[in-house]
Image (cartoon, rainbow, N blue to C red):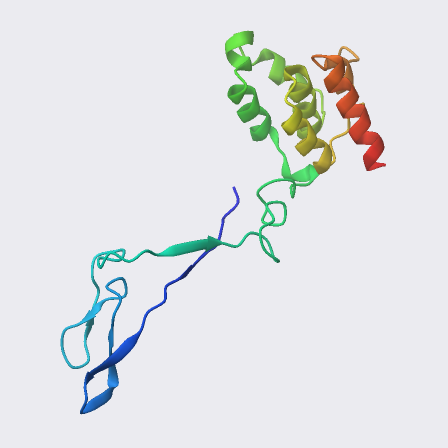
Length: 173
């Protein structure tokens, strides 16, 4: 799971609390707290309470908004996928409900096929084009064969998905 750093930028001003002690500021933002004595700062409730608004900007990746660079999409490599990912996808796509058991998934896992290639086969059989693209970018191999001799292209739900897999692989090469 990727973490997303967030940076809050809260503008505030300060003014001296007492002209005789100009080095002790009073903060005008309740978000930061209020000063109740000469040098004690007590926190207030979370969030601005004076009606002002606070904005938050998310900075993805190294150079701005880039989900791929932030590790959210497309930054996974072949070995980042494991058997748990296969089971989660199998459950997420409702294949367990259709199949009635994990037998089909277990059969693929027991054939010594890399999990990312199994995921590609499953995604192709479901017509899940965004997942197919993610897996191909990660290094999934579309011509790996299962025990029946079928590849992800053979399992594709329709010609559009077959063409997508083959076309993506040609572009990548």
